[in-house]
Amino acid sequence: MSKTVCLVDDDPSVRKALSRLLESVGIGVCEFATGEDFLSYVVSHPVSVVVLDIWMDRMNGLEVLVHLCSLSPKTRLIIITGRDDFAVRSIASQVGAAFLLKPFGDAEFLDKVQNALTDCAGRGRIC
Image (tube, rainbow, N blue to C red):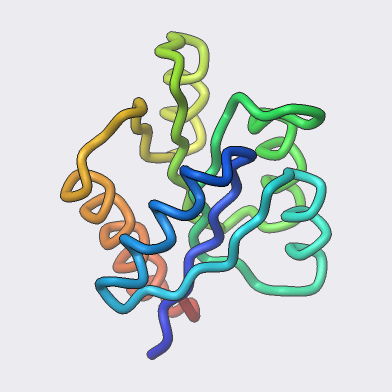
């Protein structure tokens, strides 16, 4: 089964590093620099797992999350952020998302992604 993760982050260096890491373990990546581009993609493509940065320009990750919950409520979510914020942690917990504070370790990140992929596969969804 093909495994693909959507990665939404406005920092090109973060996208590049995380994409290389995921690809190194055989996970495909669809990269998006903006929340708007990602949401346009979600309208016509099934998305099982998304790694979503919270603090982005124009449309932040919380705004993306609101739209994502209505467009694709079963999508597994991993929230990444460079700012430790209790409210963001609380929202992540409420929607069942994994939460990672930048900088995080490769092993920790891969573990969260593998868990999300396993969870969606266990629910009979294509990942």
